[in-house]
Image 1 (cartoon, helix red, strand yellow):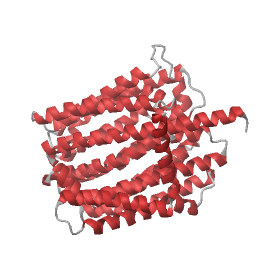
Image 2: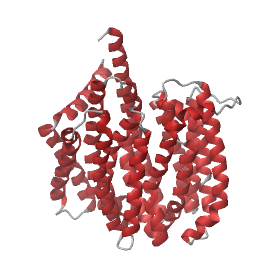
Image 3: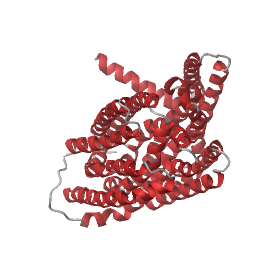
Image 4: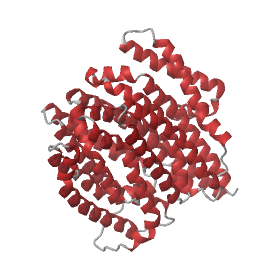
Amino acid sequence: MSTQDESANGSLKSRTTKGLVWSGLSNGLQQILGALFGIALARMLTPSDYGMIAMVTIFSLIASAFQESGFVNGIANKSTVAHRDYNAVFWCSISVGTILYILLFLSAPLIASYYGIPELKPLSRLVFLGFWTGSFGIAHNAYLFRNLMVKERAISTLTAIIVSNIVGVILAYLGFSYWGIAIQTILYAATTSALFFYFSKFRPSFNIDFKPIREIIGFSSKIFITNVFIHLNNNVYSLILGKFYKPEDVGNVNQAIKWNLMGQSVITNMVNNVTQPVLQKIQTDQDRQLRVFRKILAFTSFIAFPSLFGLALVSNEFILIALTAKWSDSAAYLQPLCIGGAFLVVSNVFANFILSKGKSNLYMFSILSFGILQLLILLAAHSYSILFMLQLTVLLQFSWIFVWLSLAKPYIKYSLKNMFHDIFSYAILAALAALVAHFAFSLITNIYLRFIVAVFTMGGAYIALNKLFLPAILDEVLEYVKNIKRKKTV
C-alpha cells in the first residue's frame, strides 16, 4: 500500500472514529435530556394527552417523508455534488412541504372523523406545521450528513431538544395539555432547521433548476417510500389502537414506544451518522469493507443488546420511579418492545450496508414487506390484547434479521456463522446477564433498590461474560478510553 493510500485510510479511520465518538456522545446526551424532559412532561400530563398527539403524529411523519423524499441519503450516495444539487433539494422540499400542508389542513376533518374525536381537527392542523417548518432545513441537513459534519448536527439537535422541551414543560405546567406538546414539536423543527442553515456552507439562491432532482430520484424515491413505511412501522400502533381502543390505551402504548425508541436512537443515530458514508467510500475494496462492516455490526450488537434487554428487565421499576403509577400499564408494553428493538437496531446496520451499495430498491423491499406484515399482524390480533399484538411483532422483528442477511449476501461474503459471532453471541450474553440480574433483585421489595441492583448487576455480569467469551470489542473500547486519558495527561 502506498503512503498516499495509508494516509487516506488513516484519514477515513480517524473521521469514522471521530464521527462515532461524537455521535455516541451527542446521542447519549440527547437521550438523557429527552428522558429528563420526558419524565417531567409525563408527570404533568396524562396518557390521554399523549394519546391525542400520537393519533395525528403519523400523518405528520408521512408528510415529512414526502417532502424529504430520501434527498439526504440520495445526496450522500452521489459521487460528486455541486451547489445546484443542494439548491434543487432546498426548493423542492419547501414546495412539496407547502402543498402537503395545505392538503393535510383540508383533510383535518376526515382525520377527526376517523378517530371519532372532534378535538383532533384543530390539533392536527397545528401539529402539521412542524413538518412544514422542517422542510427549510432538509438541504442543509443533507450537506452536513454528506460531509460527515457530525459535531455540527449534534449541536443542532441538542440545542433544539433543550429549547423545545423547556417550552414544552412550561406549557404543560401552565395547563396547555396536548397543545403544549404540539407547540413543542413545531419549535424543535424550527430550531433544527435554523441551526442546520447556520452550520452548513450551502446557501440557497433563486436560480431554481430542478434537473438535479431527476438525477437522484431513482435512488431517493425508493428511500422516500421506505421512509414512509418506517414511520408507519413506528407509529402503526397508534393508527390501529386509536381506532379500536381508548386514547388512554394509545397513550400508554405510545409512552412505551417512546422510551423504546429513545433507547434504540442512542445506538442507531450514532451508527447512521457514519455507516453509509464510510462503507460507500470503501466499496471498491471488498475485503476491507467486510472487516469494517463486521466491526460496526459487532460494536452495535455489543451495545444494543445489553442496553435494550436491560431496559426490558427494569421496565416496571423504571416506569413507577420515573413516571409514577398512572403510567404503570405501559411497563408491560415496554418489555417486548425493547427486546424486539434490539434486533431492529442490529438490522439497521444491514440496511446501511445495502444503501452504501446503491441498492435502495432492496432497502425499500425489505422495509415495505416488513411494514405490510406488521400491519396484517396487528389487524388480525387487535381483538385479543395489546400485549399479544406486541409479542407477535417481536417475533417478526427477530426473524427479519435473516431477511436482511439474505439481501446482503450477494454483495458481501458474510455467512450465518459470522452472524452468530457478530450478533447472536452478544444477544446470548446479554440475556444471561439479565437472568443473573433478575435472580439478584427478585427478592428485593423496594423498587429503588431493585432498580439499582438490577442495573449494576446486569452491567457487571455482562462485562464479565464478555471478558471471558468475547473480549475483542470490549478490549478495543477500553483501549480507546485509555488513549483518551493519555492524551489528556500529555
